[in-house]
Image 1 (cartoon, one colour):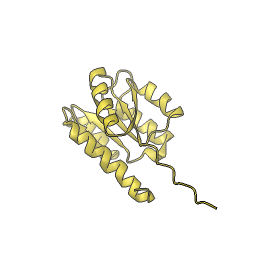
Image 2: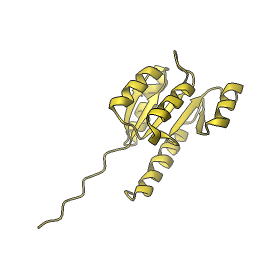
Image 3: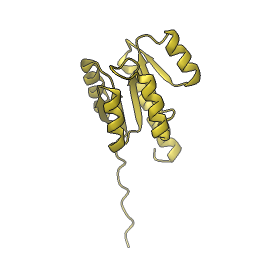
Length: 139
């Protein structure tokens, strides 16, 4: 009786929620080149619907979105998908704004200030997703 061959682990999935199409494409390419499976949405509503059918391991979330703020989406995502707690980074060009600072006091999470160096995004993804591999014993 042969032992089953361990199946390779599927790549971690990162959802990018960014309404700036050019920036969204750059982030998609950079993360995909690093071996991540990438989902992308231009709006909070699209992201919320996408996660109903496509689970993600982490979310990269812009604060300024067209109809619903990224901060409101963050709360909706954590409520609907509690496993995403601690796995969402918000991107903001105005992380020092009073409303953002106040929100962060109640909802601590990773903040990536725009403009950012793409290495910051990769370090966030690796740190988060590689750490979870170690915690589950898969890496």
